[in-house]
Structure formats: C-alpha cells, structure tokens
Image (cartoon, rainbow, N blue to C red; front, side):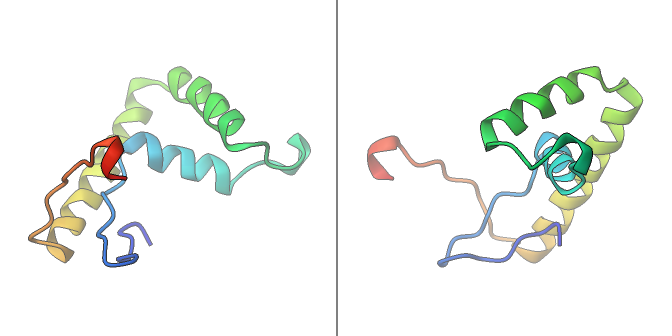
Length: 89
C-alpha cells in the first residue's frame, strides 16, 4: 500500500511525510465540504492543515515516512534517485 509498484519499468520514489499527509487528506475528504476540488486547491488546503499541525503530530508523519523509506530500501535495494533535467523528460 505505501511502497508503490514499479510503473513502466520505473521505481517510484518513497513518499515523504507531506505526501503521505496529503494522501490521507484526499482519502478522507469530508462530504460536507462538497466534491474534492482541483489538485492545486487540495494542495493549498493541505498546506494550511500541515502548517497548523502540532510538532508531535508532524513527527508521527515523519516517523511513518522513515518506516516507508526503510521498506522501500528492502524492496528496491539498488534504487538510487536520479533526477532528470527538464529537457530529458
């Protein structure tokens, strides 16, 4: 669930704490807020929620991200992040 599968021969990067938090916000979008807005709006709302989190709560997300990173390393031991230049995309 948290360690993603290979897509088109590419190993995805492990999710960081903010991405995990954003995913949770999206999955648990309250129905009283209406339909899920555009992704940019969701990111803005998530940023506001993230910035208002107490440090203890952020630490929980950081710990989860570290656990996922460790699982990712077990599943893909030879993985190394190699960012591409814009012109290579």
